[in-house]
Image 1 (spheres, rainbow, N blue to C red):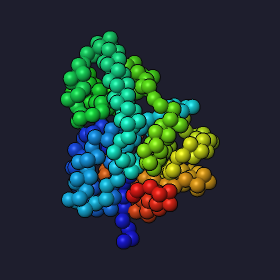
Image 2 (cartoon, helix red, strand yellow; image 1 turned 135 degrees about the vertical axis):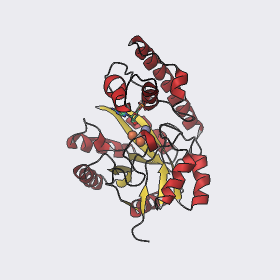
Image 3 (cartoon, rainbow, N blue to C red; image 1 turned 30 degrees about the horizontal axis):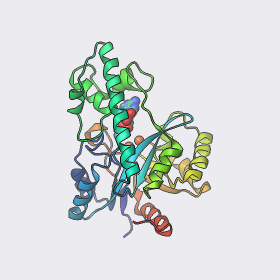
Image 4 (cartoon, rainbow, N blue to C red; image 1 turned 60 degrees about the vertical axis):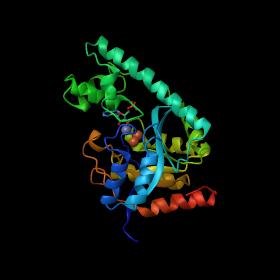
Length: 289
Ligand code: AMP
Ligand code: ZN
Ligand code: FE
Ligand code: FE
């Protein structure tokens, strides 16, 4: 069917989105999308509910995840699609991500307390769902407490990179992260490469060259925060490195204002053909689809 569109990057209450996984899938179906991927940060906990809802809503749901890795110039994000039931290695990695986050959240709470802005972990937990807590939840708790008036202000003054209460998180190297996801048989995508201020075209070229050697499958060319030039650059460089294309809104529900499922900031229309190409490559590699 021509004209069908998809969204391969979304977040639910299983990380820092505001929708329950099933509600997110229902919204995607109601929006007329042909397929949606749930890609929560560091968590597979929303996938079972999303899959169950897929059956009822008649929309394809691709099980996914988003993880952060460290690279030469800073933190980069990888999206893994077609995530299976986790292997022992993946379970271990997810447990470590959770522990690292807990330690880091605690350190950020201590930093905030030193700045005269005390919060309890309990206050932070109240802002989220089930599994993963991070800076977005701290920002929401700070706003609820009246320490800041917007989430944005919490990041700009305290939680953003290098700000007063910022604590770095231990991350896998890019090669380790790609290897972890490939080890699960996932399709690995470099998420929103043009989102990062440090990502110049030559750096992106070098990154794609190294990452494709490590097993990267695709580049997220279509994303809410990519402008036309960024998208075009991704498309060109992907072709040069024999990488496929992906796209998603990075929808977070109420927790990222102005981003609509499947449409981003109004600029997205991601064709179903991208998903078909990703599937085709998996079939060729003998992987499930
Ligand atoms: P964490 O995973 O705990 O390091 O939090 C990272 C998340 O916080 C990202 O996925 C973004 O959604 C959000 N975030 C990071 N930097 C900012 C910022 N400057 N303003 C608003 N949100 C941000
Ligand atoms: Zn997020
Ligand atoms: Fe991301
Ligand atoms: Fe994301």
